[in-house]
Image (cartoon, rainbow, N blue to C red; front, side, top):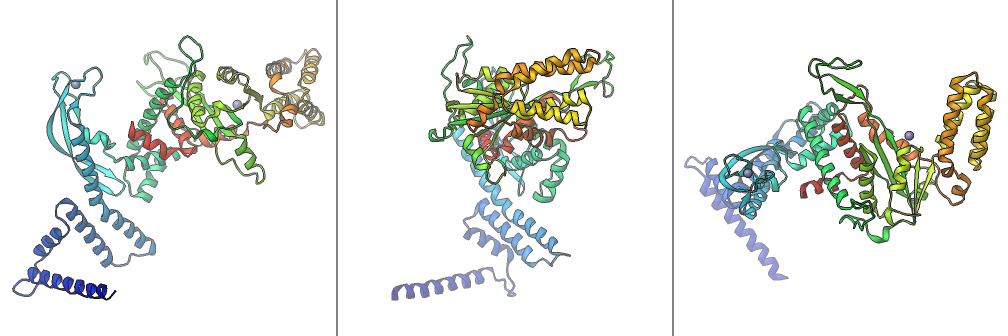
Length: 524
Ligand SMILES: [Zn+2]
Ligand SMILES: [Zn+2]
């Protein structure tokens, strides 16, 4: 113990001597301090090199902030603190990233040309300096440049940049992550404003859009490749062992009863007309960019377990653990992406998969496609069935009349008790009685068809007895808050590709998978 006290005294003396020595070495003849000498000594003490310079830069920034006068308001003070914090660390961040690049370049060894079908060797052409924007400011980085030896190819490769996720967009991966995440949450204009105000990232709307679409396209390509790898059907159409993705949940999380709610939503998409010289009725746009408006369908699925649904009941809050899958395009491609997610969640091993929907044709095809023989139960959303009954009752007896209400309630009650066949019979009897009203006859005929098609998916008393849900309200809500809130704002028009990419990013964001997906991107 006594020794440690003596040690402490010795260290104090040593430190005092060190400071005194430092003072003598940086003192000029007139007694003033030689700033250059002081800085050089400090750099030396910090180990020299880029790291030491960066540390001293940070110290100088903090010092300047400490001495700065208070701003007009407390908001301005905090603004100053935020800027100082960014600026104090940015040179060090640059150092660390440069170190990673250097290591990646050393590890890369001989570089081969990545250009499709080339694969020739690439020769190093020295290093170049490139600027990148990080969340803390501008970084200046040295990158080795290699060029393909085939003159007709001439592809340029930056092996260090690729390994560190640095693209030609000149944003660091973290910065690109912030830009794309906010651009997925909000319209581009709004996202760019918030990026500037909250994160001090200056980016154009155009760049934000390009980055976001690129992320969507890359992730979609990764998903499609994985979906192909895990497809449950061989080219012959026979079932095959499809394996399981590496990031699947643990086996003990396999649900007994799993739910799949699925539905479609239509953002405004536009297709450029292939022949711009031909006048097409209803075409819009200026010279050379004529297009026609469509409403391509984004197919949405929500996956959750019966356990998660039970937890929701007492408080009537929203379900906490939901996973969304969204895809604009044919149901077979949607199905393969959905299956990939089901494998990841182990829903394929559930004892029962309940598919809740509005009874759209493609959803029934999807139900048949799922390779879970005898374990898939399709249920028609009760509220769709009831809503349709109300529509026809209004047509028959007039909106708001007693007779309309009485009839609609009776039909809904009968359906709820499992008596859809009675309703079908009654509707059929109504047709000849209304022969003079073609719109009524048509509507009644359509409803009969709808109920007949879905009869076996309307056994509501049986479902409720088994404790199963009979509403697809969660996916109806997802149509709005997952897809519509970003893709269906007033005046928004999309190309099909852009809508497809953004729909996928929205599903990631709302499934709380954004961070996981960013790491997946970096590893690809
Ligand atoms: Zn090449
Ligand atoms: Zn629907």
